[in-house]
Length: 192
Image (cartoon, rainbow, N blue to C red):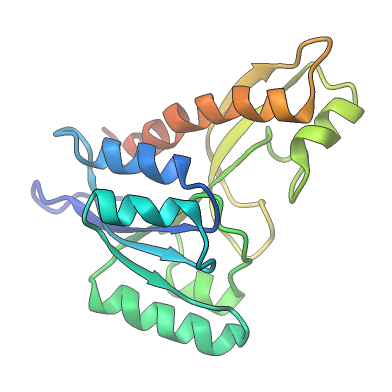
């Protein structure tokens, strides 16, 4: 990805939940060396706790209900165009985007996943890693393609699974690393 001049790339973050990765991305985007600027927060969940960051950081937010996926995605694409968004960061967004949507933004949608892909795609990653007696789990930032959690990997971070690990304790350990990894992956794709 290329930076045009020294202008930051307009970015939208899609969330469904607490928004802790959103918060770390906003803080990163405000640093001088950051290639992105977060202009829009999109959520499919009216009760998403992460939406409070839109208010705190004065960022435009839009909530879409996905009852009619085709129609909703059309509205989202319009919103992205209206805001001149060039990059999408999925941060705990619990909806699967259609092939058509992904095609329109090919190579410009990133996702963070709480496992060392290609292992444990989808949900309940921590519990599955523990049940599988893995020694390590971690997180992955990857490009989004039309297959679930299967796009080209940008960066990964390993986390050791301790003896008495629970899915809750592992989730907490991995989340700390997610907050560091996502900004690093963004710097990497912009060759910074």
